[in-house]
Image 1: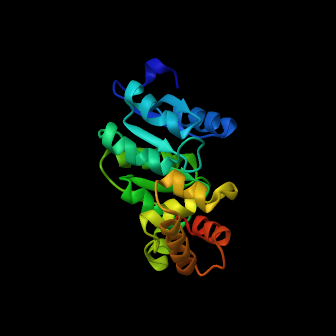
Image 2: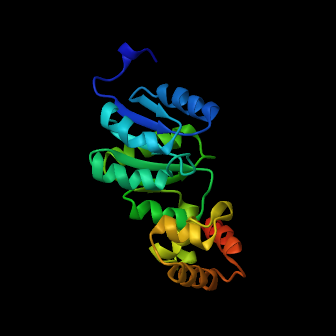
Length: 210
């Protein structure tokens, strides 16, 4: 619809998606809604807050898996830096742990990408009205899965374990002693029911805990 046919006050949307084709398609489809306007697009998580401070969107639509910073981390920063902006998490990964983390970060909704664009557009409108929008199947799965068993420090230690990092590397990155790092990793391995830290990382990611 031509811009001059839009309502006087369109819903301003920021779109964060690292796949350019997906980002462009979503922007095009959402832009066809008469009351929605995509005012900014980013492909990295660490660009979200700065762009939002400039573009002042009403709603930010964030993917989780983004370079630089995850959508979940960006959601928490938006809550502090741009509190008037409502956040919707839109992801391929419908993992119960992600849903819980999204709600803890202040997100107004959590949707998977395989839904029709009409539902996404309506979710944006609902979020702006102050409603919470969650994929029903994912909500049920999150309730049955229970809370994340990992503490924040255990998550930090596992997150720093990727790419073959040594205990010394992790300790230096987290400003902890090596013995403390070993304790956190051992606890995380036990809680995930795995045999080593690499398996623990995979399991935690699969569950959406990391």
